[in-house]
Amino acid sequence: MVKSVKILLFLALISMLSLSFSDGSYAKEIQNLVSNPDFENGTTGWSLGLGNPFGVDKKEKFPVGNVVLAEIINVGANDWEPEIHSPSFSVENGKMYTCSFWAKADAIRPIGVKFEQLDTWVGPFQSFNITDKELTEYHFSPTMTMGSPPLVVIHIQFNKVKGKVWFAHFRVYEGKYVEDDLIAKPKIAVDPNGSLATTWGRIKK
Image 1: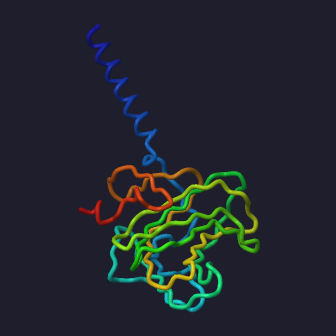
Image 2: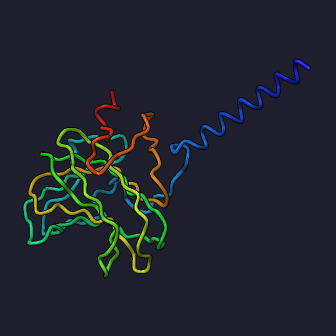
Image 3: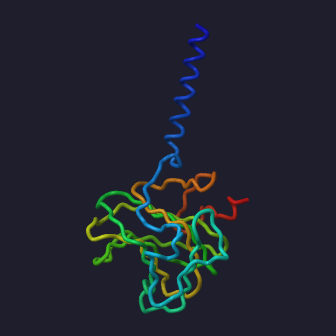
C-alpha cells in the first residue's frame, strides 16, 4: 500500500511538472515567418529607403546573429520616409500574430512598427519609444485585419527623426507572445512605451 501511494505521488508530481511547463509560454516552439531574422546574412532580404546606411555593426554583440545599424540621415515628407521592410511572408485574416525584436537608439526616440500588406499598405500598427541605453526587447501581438495574398512585411518607420537605431533578433510568428529561449530570463510583458522591457545588459550579467 505504501509503495502504491509513493508511485501515485510520483506520478502526480510528474503530471504537475508537465502542466507547468506546458503552460509556460517559453515551452512553446514557434515558426519564424521572416527569413534572415538574426542578420546572419547581413541585411539580405531587408531594405531601408532613401539611401540611408543600413548594415551590420560589428562593434555590437548579441547572443545570436548580428546587430544591424540603421543610420537615418535622409528623411522625406512623411513619417514613413524612410522605412525598413523585412522579407515578406503570408498571414491569415482574423488570426493573431506576434512581432518581437531587440533595439536601441542613440537617443530616446519613437518608431512605428507595422504588419504591412504589400500593394495596399494597410495593417496593424504599433508605436514604441526606443531606449537610448542597451538593446531592449519590444513586441506586440495584433489580430490581422487583412490576409494574404498579397504578402506582408514588417514595416518600421522613423517618423522623420534623424539618428541611429540598432536592431537584432526579429521573431514573427502566429499566436501570442512566446518568451525567447536565448537564455534563462524572467518572463516579461512589454507595453508600447517599453517601460517593462528587458534589456540585454540586465540579463547578460
